[in-house]
Image: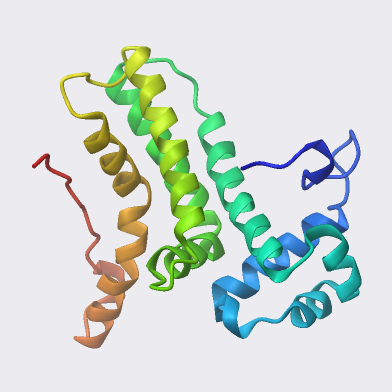
Length: 202
């Protein structure tokens, strides 16, 4: 799903300014997350970045191409978070460190959480490619952990994939619901409850 070297977000070997392509992707991600893809035209993305629609078409072709590029950006963020974790310590510590790394990335990038929420809960199927990419990534990660002795082979790999994704994103998806309910019933903002989800094998 990730792009070629030319597609990377940072231009030049020194990690300088974002390329025009990267700025377009970032703007589209933020706008789609806030308003939904249907309410954001390519013209609006172009205006947000300060480029022409022609430049967006040059880089992405169509609006569908732009959406695929935004999906790729989300997957790249997850891959980048996982890459920060060293495989040292016990199996449980490594798995937890990986989950924490993804959760921290998502906390620092709320637009990614909102985009994931919108994309994965769509009923028209447009979110299917992103879901497929994330599931494929997680499946590869789980398989690698199992081969490295860092995940139990007594548990179904499919259950582990679901458990991993829920551990990484489930709480952040549902926490806003908890906070909205807490605010509605007049709960103390400093003492609002947090959510914990457990996935059990069938």
